[in-house]
Image (cartoon, rainbow, N blue to C red; front, side):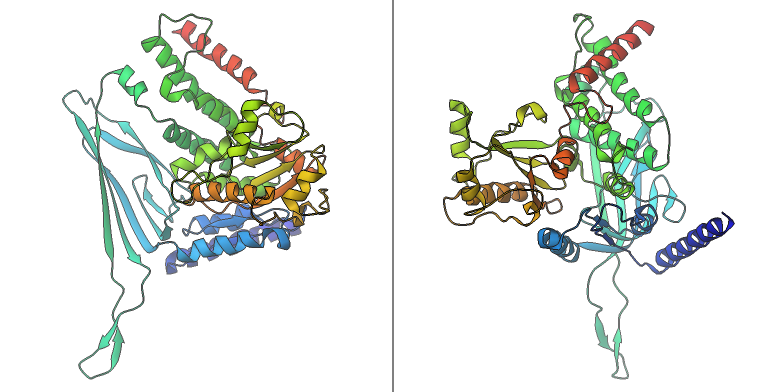
Length: 473
């Protein structure tokens, strides 16, 4: 309607003006969104843009329940207020002769922030923000053994204003100091494809490919999936054609360093950020924004979850029993404890008589099967504990020594400690035959999810694409 269009134009003008005022005044905006109902809309597509273009963060928790999720707010605020911060940042990436910056992959963009693809200015940067630059060859490097890149950032640190006395005896504040941070990296040049594949790093490759896919989805590019698959097929084709040409045509040959790349790309297609069905719009936007600024080591855990067995009530093999008995016990190194051996992320591994801990990168889900013995539930949550959809959000692990709850608490603590450089992981109890169980199953990426086939089907399709490219060449 004309009234609706007029309202949207007013909103757009208001938020664009707000963004200009914040950027011009060096003001950073953080957005905290905690909807308590499924239908609540937080408009993260608009509010998140203001946060990311001023160096801020977006904090989001769907189906927020205070008694269960209050610790997440505390930890998010604690991390935000205690981590190192830099203000009024101006940065540039320089490269040596023969190499040039092709594009920048970051949460922010546009002329208000970017001078060009090599330089930007932003009101704030924190310790969690990671920026990726894609470089390209602009001339032959035949006579060059090393190429160099240098990142330079001028910034004002978070510090109290320094005061002193003027000649007339009055107090006056000196302007804040500006600092310059310089990082220089030297990289060897190789002309051997085998060396290139041997030393390839799968985490960095996944990080770049995920950012490219997230950027395309944020810009509503309809062929983002094909453009994401294309470099994967090209990588495997180049390895097959140049390093493994004598291998059987019926096999999908992968370089050792990139053996996990296909499973990560398959997991990307099944992630909530890239699924349009059965996922809230705000949740998708939050994930996409996070993907654009995460550190490299965070991507594998967000794409492929870790599933840890905690307990089996009836069926338990000898090796599994020994492993579960050791889980949660001290390793003898500092205050670390043993973690259970992780399982493949598939529903086949989840049994109804077991308790499993699933680390999906943004939370820890403690899944309790419907056939777990009451005695173990009492040792886990306390006497008389009943696990159902109504009381699952309010269940607390027992903390007394040698109880099952204490063991699980130590395992949870070890996982959080291992990921101390990443945001806090809240613990959520999930019972069988509940809505939370349905959501948990969408993280088991080796299964068929939302129209996407299982891992075996993905590998078969990938093999056909590589073989077709070989035939064309």
